[in-house]
Length: 307
Image 1 (cartoon, one colour):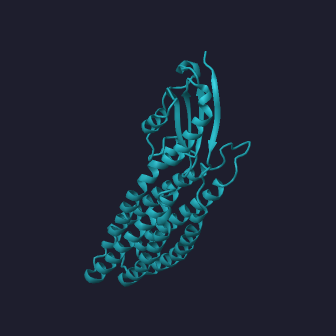
Image 2 (cartoon, helix red, strand yellow):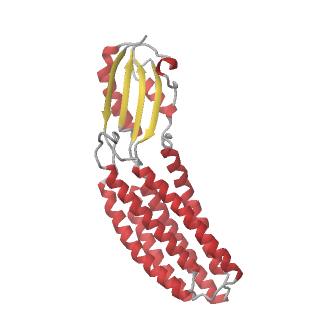
Image 3 (tube, helix red, strand yellow):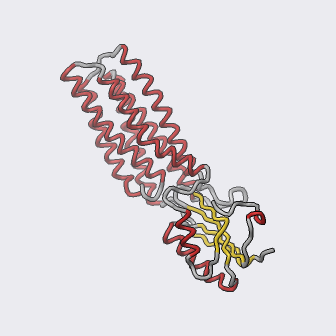
């Protein structure tokens, strides 16, 4: 048998910061305008590279909209049906964004491969001017989103996409120049495949991280061994078991753990110190810590002793 001391929650609920929303809204507007312009000129210039880049930019706009919506949902308070709130919607938004990019890659690659067989004439000068505008729009968007990339996976995804788009636009400008100088029509579909390669490279990490978090994996910037050592290093803690760490959203992390504290009377101050330390050191803002005075085996709780 074992005795339970304190079973308390120490929360500092995290949500995507409101300051992130204005840059996202500006980036959405800028890119929507540019998608329309690029799509029209791509059609007029008969450039699959421009149309491919417009499709990619539109998928980024959808991703930005999803991130924006997830931020709004994350601020909704917890309720009887969603006791942790709707913060996990930000993870679903990132996952959906990654899947959308993969679908766009398949469509672009299919069209580009077809054009290798019968390359149509391409207006190289138009391609250069429109892609040049894309460098400005995507570069400005990346600059707006740069500040939040270290705090939110959705912001990091948006920043990477905008930065990759700017680099792709540079490639499209170069393709237009080569077409003007050499008349080599195959350059246009070749650059389209390069667009696909850049998109896949920039979105693979997002897909991996989003799937990991959706399966309640430990966020990549945290180490459970280090967290366990930190907790066990506090005076009075004899052992830690049933340690679990997972993401409530792309910005909020939760932790639960059972602490063996022989001196049960020391629990209150210990919980305060541990919760503050976890928040400051690991950015874990939702810690639920249960104090026990004797060791409970895994058979007692029905859960493994390590997460």
